[in-house]
Length: 350
Ligand code: SF4
Ligand code: SF4
Image (cartoon, rainbow, N blue to C red; front, side, top):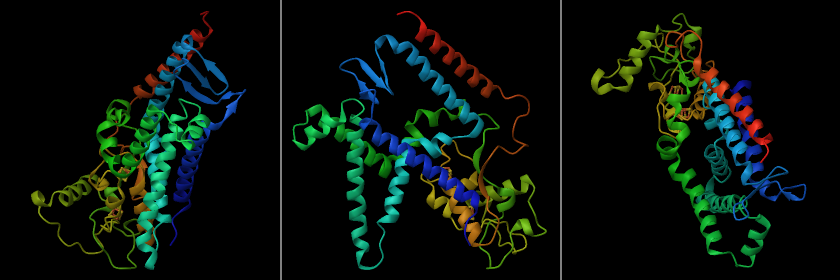
């Protein structure tokens, strides 16, 4: 059974955003506007070329206010809609998606199967190198870098930075993803300051899913049986007992009429880049990539159950605080003030 239009739309949006960002990142160093590079941070000349404008040191103040306004806008989007930055825009997420695509493209059956990993890693090394060259192309004209590279006359610093960014790309996506998201990323570490009790997060619906367990083919969803949704306390109790068998003891074997919709297939856990089990509740380490949501939707579709056992949603009403939300107002006000100051400082005589 195929998955729903909602999931296809979600995947299409993520793919479109990823392609747009990758296209912008790799093409911008090559583009010219008004006979100037579209984006070049020329540090030695103390000059930034930005989409047809040339910014000098005296433009630093308006630029700083623009950056602050952008950060306030990001906080505003985050508190209202969740970590869309992590799931759609973060370079690490986008490049991880590229690597997973390569993984699928280079997985072969039969005698060619051993060739797949070699091809995959060779392609990934090339992409990492090209990412390093493109990144340096934001600081030094990329045409000149490429000409020097072809003539083997790159300077030591250019070699160092290209190798550094290529290595960072390769290691980040393949080995350090979880550590960077959990321990290094400032945006991730500041989530408790940015989000509020009503910010949507990716959640498992324990009232529908518990008690979990495998079931016979042809079983009906809990939503289509008289059992319906469990009350929140009973559902939390099942989750706790499943997560802490050493304390709570093993779960009994439930009869099929009592089981929830989680078939305990473990797919949500196996696809999570952070290694979380979303069924244990929301974790601040969750980057809301939606991988568990997609994996569970596929399992629901295979079992002919409605999708959405895991999905992005606001906190349950019983947990969310009522009353006006202060953080969105604060971030919106900060964004507007920063934009106003940017305009004022840009117009002020130098
Ligand atoms: S629990 Fe894991 S897979 Fe699910 S959204 Fe969070 S980080 Fe992604
Ligand atoms: S993917 Fe869905 S059905 Fe499978 S274990 Fe996770 S929550 Fe349960």
